[in-house]
Image (cartoon, rainbow, N blue to C red):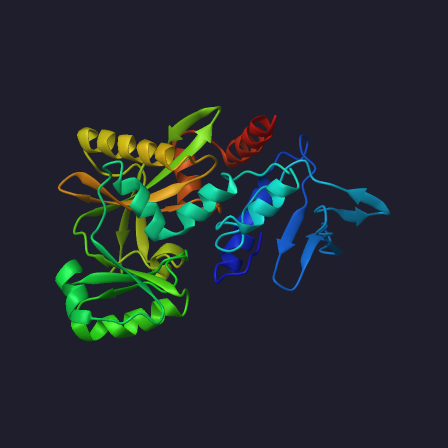
Length: 319
């Protein structure tokens, strides 16, 4: 838990929830903080023990401890973008996320959209910019229209995202997004119902969890709406059976074509009952209040079962 991004505190919350719900009779878990300045293991008294990066081990009571599996609860870099996972894979240490390439791909919104579009999945119209690119606002508006969304290409938890209603609001939104990332996306506004869809590997099969409808009190599902109670999260979503089937089929298709495994939570906008894919989160929030655990509960899966399944799936895939 932890990480190098703006999502560090959310990751620490998720990681502690995982730690508290793991079956202590079955596992011997340790909390590992991955920070830029240090990698450490914490014991129950919050004493710190340094991680040795050559083999991801530590010493406790004069005994070297190595890990059978790593539960990845790092939102953002380096856990969600594949960097830390590639390190674990070099060391042949199982982890609960998808392989590092799939994590890197899905963390990059532009590249994810380019893949799913090839399989007929509907998405918003978008413009992609690198920092330093010439910005032609008239050309951008001609393509995506107003209002539009401006977002960092590689970031989560709605950090750096703005909804621009007028021409004058686009440049400040671009500057805000560039504070989080050197690559940004400008997307057309999709007018419809927003739903969040959890897809996981559960007991060896791809499982679509009960779908959550997002009703934000703010202009969109921003940080306040996600983490400060400024939204309603209604599970199951208030959609027709026909629309439900379309969303489930699309979500399962996206999970499969991206060669995903482990956790995922993707956002869709339903426009005239048709699902439009926005993005995928591969290390979604795992607190009791987070959307994916709510969905698991609605499916009759406890946090203990959810986390146990992730570890068992990881160990079985490495076997």
